[in-house]
Length: 113
Length: 114
Image 1 (cartoon, rainbow over the protein chains, first blue to last red):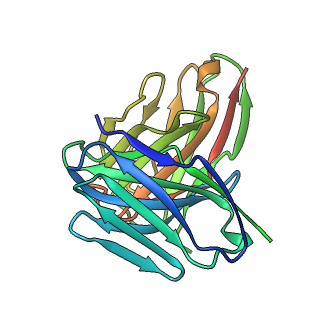
Image 2 (cartoon, rainbow over the protein chains, first blue to last red):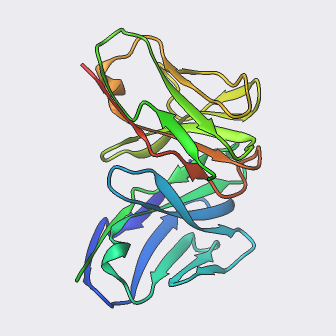
């Protein structure tokens, strides 16, 4: 059964720092991987979607990489801002798990002014 | 505006009193699903639907029912709610029936069962 782990569970950084959030998964037979952002009391917003054949995706200050063989993905946030404070979740869709996504527990990020 | 809309956003009810949480999407998406989010357990899928009249169980379907009579709507039904169903519920949708693309989430429905 696929397991998705995100480390660290919480992270606090000063404004302006570049940072990396980690996501690891146990079964490398994935179809795609998504990174989401969740603000307190709100739903999830999709940030980046990486197909299994891709190595990375970029959107503005965000860059997500995927190393399927080692079961890892990273979300790089450049020049962090207080508005980036939120919980970031990764989710994988397996090739052989119907249509379900398996979510990690999330990393709670706080960017201090 | 493209969105997934859930109602109610907040609900307090008592054990055994049937309730329905509605979900509607305006993006003509094929795939819809329900998740619950609990501290320490993360997001877990309850049910999903690939098309009208096609629904299937997720990881934690016990105590829930769903229906998909129209493409845009996917209500979650709790026939006899119990306190262990106190949770934050999310509806989500995706264009492809196999959920191969971006997943769009509603704002969430916080349910408390006393």
